Image (cartoon, rainbow, N blue to C red; front, top):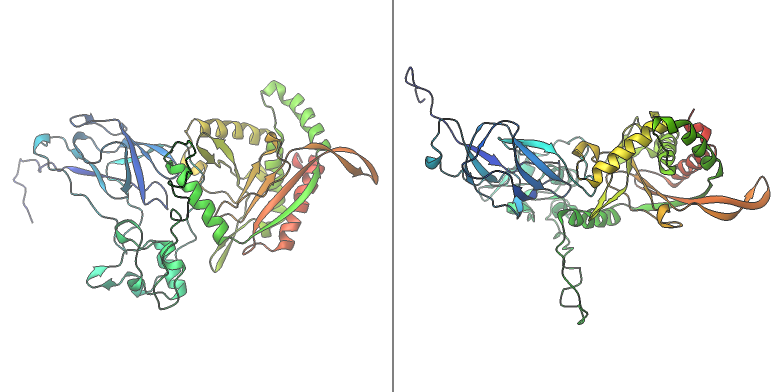
Length: 445
């Protein structure tokens, strides 16, 4: 062991600043912008960089004090792997000129902690996202072969890939990884048979129309943002992996619209103005609590049953979509939901949501009524098991109290994950939702 001479300070050590994992599924990101340069002195709390992931643009602040000795990754670099060294920080007393850039590091090996955290930065605030990819269910024990070596090299696989391999009895040593540094990811093991190697992961890019097939039509090529890539990937996975079942009901809105007008008159002095969507968020939350068999999530050989209804609300933002969450919406008043949604939507469009504000949720609601869309079928936001699609309220011939009349009617379509929710249970939820909207005093009781 190296001894320190009495009266002498230990030699200062440089700190490697690494690309952090900003979400449970992040494997790489784009270093959008450096806010510091070589030679700058930073202290704890100083913003150092902006990093774009598949979900958000995050600002990062320094944890340690020191001087920027080297920037290894230029701003604008895409595909920076989690755990890769992006800069080096010289500590107090260390000669910046003598500091050698920290060695680049590969993706974490199997058996190591999956979420690699930077030693020198922590997230400060988040920007726009296309929707959350949420943490998977609690980990299952992985058999020894999932982390064994092949030809002297350790098999590198994500925790989810290990769990799938364990469930299916797949030897990861026989699987070719398509992830960073050959890492085995979910897509590599999903098509495998027990005891065998996995089928190659589908190449979604290969199935897209080639750029050469423009047929001479004037066009321009726009590079996909991280958000748009994630939307494409997640929605493709949702339609490929989740057996959707769709159930539609027509709902009379006249009583709800009348109650909304009365409530807005009473709340005007408080600066609160309820929207129809605020009331529908509450109705969906209460319906989920009345029909708990739909407030669930499919998790392999397990079913997660939630004790509260957190509603993800689809909000369109420039370049994509984000789903901020109204937590425990069933227990909140309409005025609370309205105030919270206005704040969440504003900060979503300004790119200022924190990850916990859009990652999670037990079900989603998507309203396209303001565009005059009569009815549509929404794609489930995995790993959730249902989403409610809301169409426009419009004047239609409608039977009221046994007589044909004209009423304000909207169509609502629930999309359900048939692995977790049976058709009869979905029908009960749609019935409960319709009952709450057509008898809206239940929303304020």
